[in-house]
Image (cartoon, rainbow, N blue to C red; front, side, top):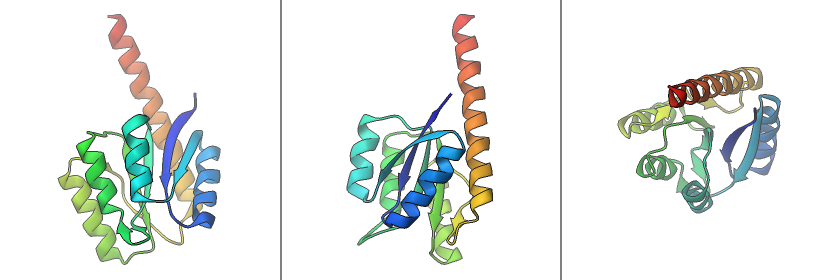
Length: 139
C-alpha cells in the first residue's frame, strides 16, 4: 500500500533527494516550495506524513505548523532544516504546543539512511492504524 507524503522544501536539490528517499520508503510524494502552496494543497488533499523545511524563502515553516494545527492534521510531521539546533528545538516545541505529531527533527545535511528508516516506520505504523480502523468498522 502506498502512502502520501507532502514534501515542503524550497531548494530543488533537497526536494529531489527527499522525494527519492520517500519513494524508496513506500510513499507517493507531492512537493511544494512555499508556505502558500503548502497551505493550498493541505486544504484539498490528505497526506499520511509531511516533511517541512523551516526556511521557505522570506517566510518560515512555522507558518505551515500553524496551518497544520488549524486543519487539525494528526499525521507525523518531520522538520528538516539547516537551522541551528536552538531553532529546530523551538520549532518542535511550537509543533507540540499546537498539538501536532512532530517527530524528532533532522538537521541538514540529512542522515539519509535514518530518514529512510524513519519514513518506513511511519508507513508501517500508518498501515497498522488503517487496519485497526478497518477492523473496528466491521465490529
